[in-house]
Length: 175
Ligand code: IMP
Ligand code: MG
Image 1: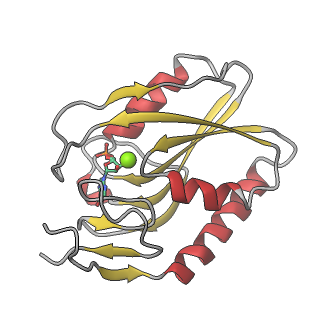
Image 2 (image 1 turned 180 degrees about the vertical axis):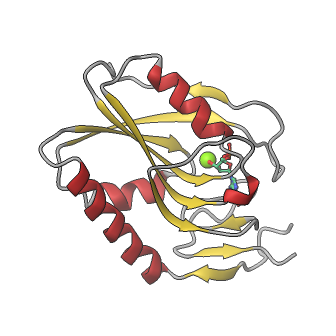
């Protein structure tokens, strides 16, 4: 795929912004009176995290985790590896794990296992997209921005071989 190929828009920037506002409201309500540690999974969740974070009205700390599952292919090549770990002490924390997309579920399952092994008070997950058809485990996120069919999507932080993350909308690549 040539990186100058223009993706076809499937979710506009406006529609995304509306949904993020709505998710933030639900999260604010759920955690009312508590402080959270938002853990963002780099690199894909960076834009979604930044937008969500600015609409949280609860005290929030931020940490990031990097997990690699895909190389330059569009299918998982191996079990996810944690390549960048958290700096925070998780004991006594309410962790909100944020990712761009729940696909096979391997990445979030691995991330949750890692976080749980550090004994936080609670752990919840929020994903921008859910491609439920592709799931190979029973992983379900607590908050989902949009459920989408089994298509490879780019933009709003999601990439194809390092490209397209900067697009303000979500698009699919022409097949
Ligand atoms: P999982 O481990 O299969 O759930 O994959 C999750 C990761 O794969 C996401 O965090 C994304 O980085 C990547 N991914 C899965 N589907 C897509 C897609 O359609 N576009 C871009 N990246 C994707
Ligand atoms: Mg990712």
